[in-house]
Structure formats: structure tokens, C-alpha cells
Image (cartoon, rainbow, N blue to C red; front, side):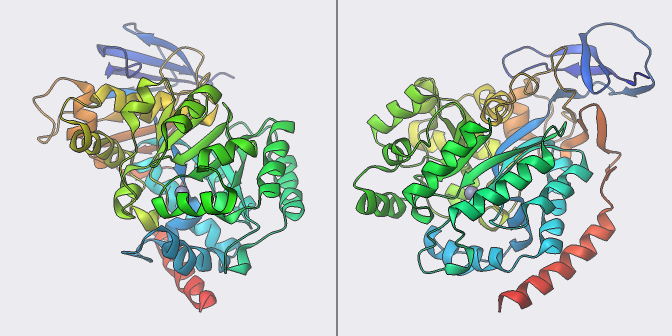
Length: 436
Ligand SMILES: [Zn+2]
């Protein structure tokens, strides 16, 4: 039997580039958007939006579910020591229960703050437990299994590429055809992967139609080390091992040379922009307006909780806008462009643009209801400037994924938060003990 959901009396904003429609409705049938605009209809479930903004769910294109439980560890360190002394030892200490707690904690925060889909990089083991956790929460996700075979003085996370691809194959077979979750292939970054590792990862992903996701050109020191090791600028090197293309997302891209930007454009590679992480690890400011002007797709993500410390796309949008104004002047990067990156740009980075990123008939009913009537948002009428500069994550009133309400009336519908809090604290203690 068909199940229908009607959100009525909303200010419907179908996409970042469109104008909002007042007193409008969205009808959902079997998890898909059936109708958008001014109409009346009957449905199994009806929600009166009371004039609030109904828009596409936010999409984060670079996060690490497995790192959320490390929140608050590794403060005030630059990238390479942060990785080697904190993040990698903690990842190595994970077990299935700590992975699950970390993933559920991430999903709770994502759902509460209006993110409906994400692209992630997990660690080298137990990725199936991240899949199980996200499956329970109802979110859409492209979950990356991490590959690394050269860990530069930190052996416990090094996994031979053939063993890693065997794990990948088990994940692929186990989760094939899942309606909401997809697997992606995630070699960590050039300094932790041999060239053979990256080539085999790229070949495997293409043979199986999977997304590729890695980090690139986050800090100057990293770029210099890649050049010293390979003789090439980072993105040129990634290109040489198959890690550019319309199926590849590169997180950060803060430090790139003009010919590397040309390579990103020519190959259709996606840039995954992480403003807070770039601030906190003092990486620099990525040339986002230049990428957009060149026609490169840019999306936004929070990166890992240890370098943020939140998974809050509202904060990322605000910082994405502000950081370019400091660099290029107040005219740089309009709020609408920021919202576009946080929705449609994200959908493209995930390879899911046919089904997400806008409110259109036939697409997945991934939507959020946002209060733009709060004292920190009125009296501005423009939904984009409100969303990027006035709204905060707690203004999200409702989060809907595939037509299912995951957050309403201040509560999550698929996660028991009290149990989660207790479990996260317990798993964190155990994790710290194992990492000693
Ligand atoms: Zn990252």
C-alpha cells in the first residue's frame, strides 16, 4: 500500500537557485517527492509547517563517522602530528562497539542539524559496523572504507592492498542494492598509500562502479612531502595513479597550482571543502571562488570531529562564506552559492544528483524544515542569507529522509539519545584504555 506524507503551509524553497514559494506544499509518496507547489491534497500523515522554510536536506561530502568519538582529543596540533599521535592510534584502538557508538553519535548530530546524506571515510577495519549503525538511523550515506599501506612510522593501521580489497569486496557484496547506503573506496591520502595501492583502489572502484574519496593538498608540508616522494605536485600525482575524474572527491584542495586546477576542471573531479577543519588545523583558505569560476564542482563537509569539533553544516556554510570575504573582499561568494554547494554540489559529489539536492518530483524526499522566524533571523526575507549567516543548527525543526521523519519536536525518532550518551561515554573510556 502506498504511504503518503503532506507538508503543507510551508515556505517551500525547491533549490538554491530558485525562489521560495509561500504557503506551498510538498506531497511525498513512498519516500519520493510526488508534487511541489501550491495545491491541496490528502495524505496518510499531514504536517502543518506554520510558514517555516522547507528546503532540500543538507549534504555533507567529507566526514569521518569513526572519529566523532575522538572529539576533544588532539587539540591544537598541525595535520601530520595530529594524525600520527592522536587520530591514527585511536583508530587503531577501535573495536566494533566503539565504531558503532561513534557512527550513531555522528548520525544523531547530523540528523539534528539537518544533514540528510553524507560521504565519509571510515578506518581500515570494522566498516561493516558503521554500515549497520547508519542503516538503523535512516540516513543516506556513501560510506568509505579506508585504505592505507604506508603509515609513515605508525604500522598498526597499514593493511596490504590485496587484503584491503578483499575486505572491500565483502562489504560490496554484503551491502549491494541497499536502498539508502552505498560503499566507496577511500585511499587515505598520498602520504599513507603506495602508488600501487592507489592504482589498485582506482581500478577496483571503476570495475565495480564505486565512488573514490581521498584527501588532497590540505597543508603545505603535505604537498612538499608528496613532491619530494613522487617528483610531482599532489594533484598531478593523484591524476597519475587514477585518482581524478567525475567519480572522485578530493577533500580540502587548499594548496593547488594553476595547472592542477586545470586538471581538476578537465577531469570533472569534485572538491570537498572543509572550512572549520582548514581553520582549526591552520591549513589555509581554499580558493573556492576560483574553483567555481572554473566550473569545478565544490561541496562542503565538516571533516572529523577532532578537527572541528562539530558536524554542523550550518557552521560550515557560514565559515565557507566568511573565509572568502577575508581573502578576496566582501563581494566574494554569495550566500546562494554557499547553499548550492551544501545541497546540489554535495549531491553531485556523492554521485547522487539524480535523486537528491533539490525538491523535485521523482527525487528522494530528503527535506528539512528550518525556523527562519527566530529573533536571530527576522526580519530578513532572503532564505539564503538567513540560512548561511543567521540560522543555527538548532533552528532545524524537522529532518526527513526518504519520506521518513527522523527528527521532530526536538527528538530523534530512530536513535535513543539517552542510551547513546551512556554508550558513547562507556566506549570512549574503553577506547582510551585500549590505546594506552
Ligand atoms: Zn578528512
